[in-house]
Image (tube, helix red, strand yellow):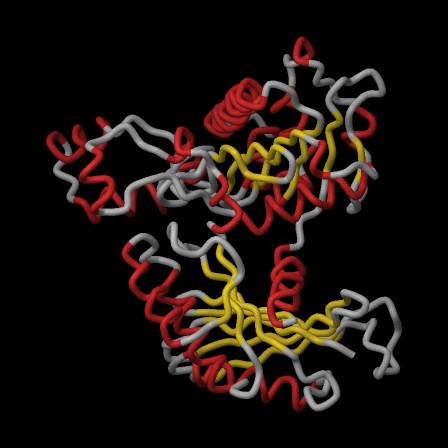
Length: 407
């Protein structure tokens, strides 16, 4: 059996999955969080599908612990303890490789990359472009390297899928020397998800991905749009950082940069305060006081005016990007919704594409409202553009790329 361990590490937590690649089955998953606080937390879940365990197939088994977890190295020791205590056995399922999600690879990394000391230095150096993400990823890589010293480690970059953007799409119209010196350009994010969904949509439709023009809408707490031509990213809404583009849970998305100058001069907000405002205090949270779309929709249904406006703003921005990317592609065969909001919010899907019938986009209300968790068509039979819901699985995609790299 061939297993891959997938690690998604942040500054004070990391998630993990152990995936059996012969069947692409998740054997176990977990979360180690509040690293560095007085009391840390860990949770470990073993899939009921593990053939070595005699448990009902209906329920995974889960365990939780609270204990001090001073750093990521200690966190991986806690994870290994969970595997020893609750399974599955890492002796029987020793990973052949460990795959790491890294948010920012700059223009340097355009494919999955075996981790070496130089790659670690490069990830650290790129932390200036992703100070909230890359340092935590690097801590996870170093700690995992100590815990699994005998297997290769592979870095999978969120930005890699977007390395095919043409210059006219990734270039900002600012002073060229400054842009070059400080690496200011569009990089794009959620690339692992966008690439996975584009390929899964082609498989679902039984059509070659090379023949399809697609728009992928990754709508979660973070949200982005990607135009995919023949399996290659040609335009995407996030920019040099994950702040640009759609309205998100706590991020503003597109905003006139002059607003920042105005708030600095008139409200006295400094750079750090503006950074916090745009990244952590805006989006749905800024408009409503609620950062989760489920809470916003519930409040809107109860008549809350700010929540109703927030949904209007949210879908207005999506619709604008769909129209713009339709124009960039020239022809659209498929539009796919994915991630937490995209997969589970029929209202958002319906309203995001309402009024685009002239472009050949028509949603079937019953299909859109049907309760289902699998890949499915939600467009009407007479829709020229096929509209899909495709559940994303970034961990599986990381595992696939990791295994392909080490092989």
